[in-house]
Length: 193
Image (cartoon, rainbow, N blue to C red):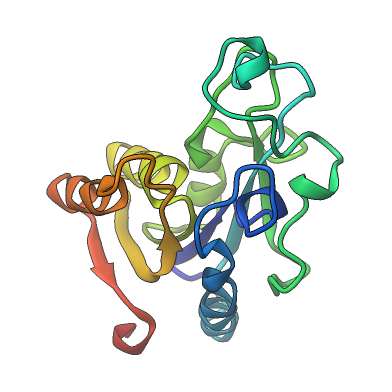
């Protein structure tokens, strides 16, 4: 059983160019994450993917008092993973933000279809060291990394596999600094051991 796991955060159509809440250059992470996925498959390490899974009416959306345009609505094309993302068939998928009163930025606020939270899933798989990439650096990636550290996991942020929304020009950079300050390591594919 591998001590490692790869977490792919919210690489969904709505967060990629042309989507309802596109992260600038969001699709650039896809081929890089595919490389990481191949490496983790070789290591027989678990791969976990999170996805926003919002109802059509949620306080998360501007229309109902939130700050974001409608995105990643359950069952919609926008909620699907980017078509070029190559995840193995045994990837565990966690859905988050499925309730009308949930924002749920962190993957640790999501569950599998059968209700298993991310912490329990990782512990069941024996993972202690997690590697995190995806979208967006300054929101869901950051929240997932911070929650993972709080749960006692060793966390490595995959710098070449994240992109930020950057509502303010340095949000992603500041998010990375905060994750490191809280204890996350950083790496890129060519430095992955």
